Amino acid sequence: MKLLLKSLALLAGAVLFFALVGLFLTWAPDRPVDELKARWAQAPSQFITVQGMQVHVRDEGPRDDPVPVVLLHGTSASLHTWQGWAGALKAQRRVIRFDMPGFGLTGPHPQDDYSMAAYVRLVAGVLDQLGVQRFVLAGNSLGGQVAWEFAHAHPQRVSKLVLVDAAGYAMAPKAVPLGFRVARIPLLRPLVRNTLPRGLVQQSVHSVYGDPSRVTPDLVDLYYDMTQRAGNRRALGFRIDQIMVEQAQADAAAARIASLKVPTLILWGGRDALIPPDSAQRFARDIAAAKLVMFDDLGHVPHEEAPARTVSPVIAFIAQ
Image (cartoon, rainbow, N blue to C red):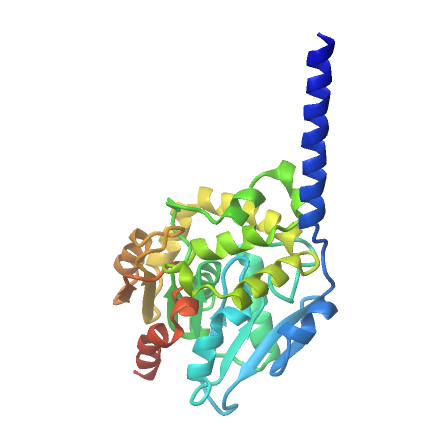
């Protein structure tokens, strides 16, 4: 019996030791936004005060463009996800993108409000601050849902709508990024607010690409740093909780989608395992005269994975 107890004590000690080593190796507390600006907020980045937040914005292209293009990113992404599209569009169009509350360098909402209504108000507030009343609105994933919800709430302000692997319908994901799965577990949230294995971030980014070989170390750096921005990991937990609320209200959301009258282009990655292509087909059926373009080899973030190829139909669409 003594030998058994001694063996169990040694085993427990070893487990504790390796747990502490793992905790030490993955220790990554929040980083202040000012520490991240040098790398990720270079020109033309600016910060504007909207609804009590310092919103990270990039506003490029000709200021006399009567109908700018506004780009909204998805969960755990940032305005950087649109770098390729912005580069292709800004020679002819004014292009506005910004980090939404809870993500990127903007950071958490002062009242921890990550509802659709709050995001719609934020979009209106940013565009009002920039003096833009009417625009083309494009969004990916969460940003796609914010885009069509904004178009439903403010149809007079949206000239055209571009939905890129957009959320909105009841979801039946084939795979969920590991980071999102961890954030779903309330008991783990205090731990993940201070630890961040780089491998977890890399696996999460790989899972939203159709071809993970396109994921570069610099891209993993971006997602890793944006996750560490002070308050973002805590905000992700609130946002995941809000998704559960929205999923319970999916039938009402579907009715709002079907009421949209704005000209709409739908772009989708055929290998999207988070919001599979069935949702693309449903958007195309429910929105009158919507056009669908499918990229069979791309994943959940086709605009980021293959920007030159995916922006081409957008250029044609907004020129019509």
